[in-house]
Image 1 (cartoon, rainbow, N blue to C red):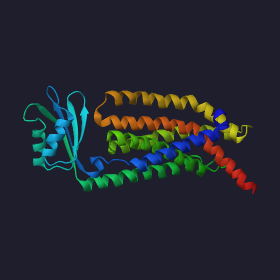
Image 2 (cartoon, helix red, strand yellow):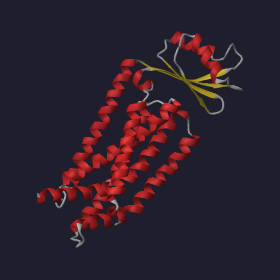
Image 3 (cartoon, rainbow, N blue to C red):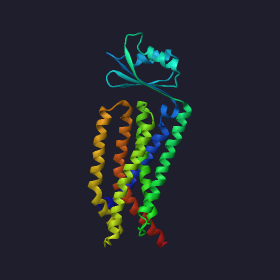
Image 4 (cartoon, rainbow, N blue to C red):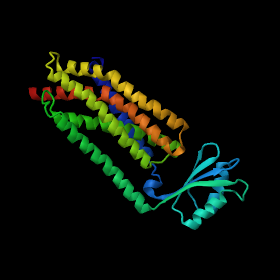
Length: 300
């Protein structure tokens, strides 16, 4: 009952986090990676020692490549993101990165994506998220179709979507802040992280709502508020343990994993943390709030 007793505080915290995250998104923006805006990604590995980033920036500008993002990988490697390159430009860039043979290197990978392909990927990514959200509304409405009192089943679906938006807006806002200072870019793995957050987070919410449905169906004498509070308490440890187990796996991936998966692990970890928070401290209080709002309207 602690969560329901202080529901206004938890609702305020969630709303405040979403507002702050939206401010970060609109003020700092999200830098699109080559997956969406097009460009080239080159990964090189130096044999003995690698040159300083400033030295690479100089030779890259000499190749008429004005903007390039250089990220260290491991102890001897670099990830270099540039505009779209032709094959002659690609070969010339690889040659120049050895700085006249002073720093021998090996090309580990090269990916080039045109602007039209990137734009198509961006549209598909947005559509994927929209279709997932619509599917969640329909599924929960169907799953809770026998629950009509005191809150209709379709409102369970609507509340779930509101909390899921909470779960992806907050990590996106935090990523926008991080991107502003580190230059991190949004790529397909970022979208995959958001979709994974939606999938895992909706599971937690269904577990909580399903326990509420069972307790309501069993005809408990408690009030609706008390039933929601008891149901949330019954699922608390289970939800927390499952989420923490996944986060514990993601932390080593972020620390020791390749550079290309660090943002994925970071965004997913943040999203799962706030996902479990919203399942317990936002979805349940919001359900009680909707019930109270309905009761207040019926009295008018």
